[in-house]
Length: 160
Image 1 (cartoon, rainbow, N blue to C red):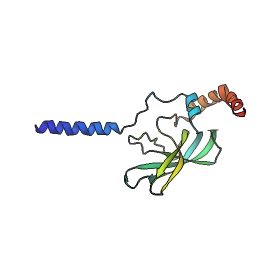
Image 2 (image 1 turned 30 degrees about the vertical axis):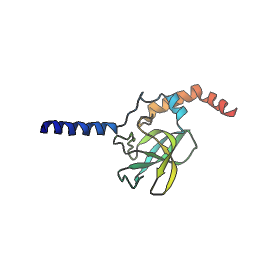
Image 3 (image 1 turned 135 degrees about the horizontal axis):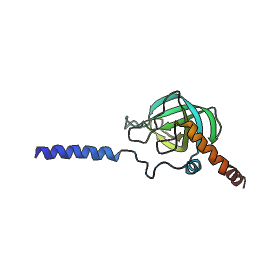
Image 4 (image 1 turned 60 degrees about the vertical axis):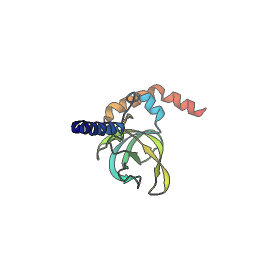
């Protein structure tokens, strides 16, 4: 009887942990989908990271703000520095960036509730289910090919 209880507890532990795991159903989008669904796409070097708590009831509910020095903007407003928010990467789909490394980042603008500040703020958010990558040369070539093939069409569409 005792073995059954232990098995049940261990089984429930794995079920609960599995339910909080991240899943990128359908895989990562292709460049066309990613460029069309992202609000911001840029190449930049990570210069700062800061963990912040987003909920007092759940002190473990944290996110990370990453600040990048932008080297090239593919989509969105051109800025010198951009801050991106993502989860910690422990089953929440957060992307783990490393200081001093170049990345191509695909991000969407999302509203995040900040109970500590009693407000809702908009942030650029990315995760592991986007095309965000440290493989800058490879991804840069794919983006350039996409822009060369479809970029002029999208510019004409925006004019009308």
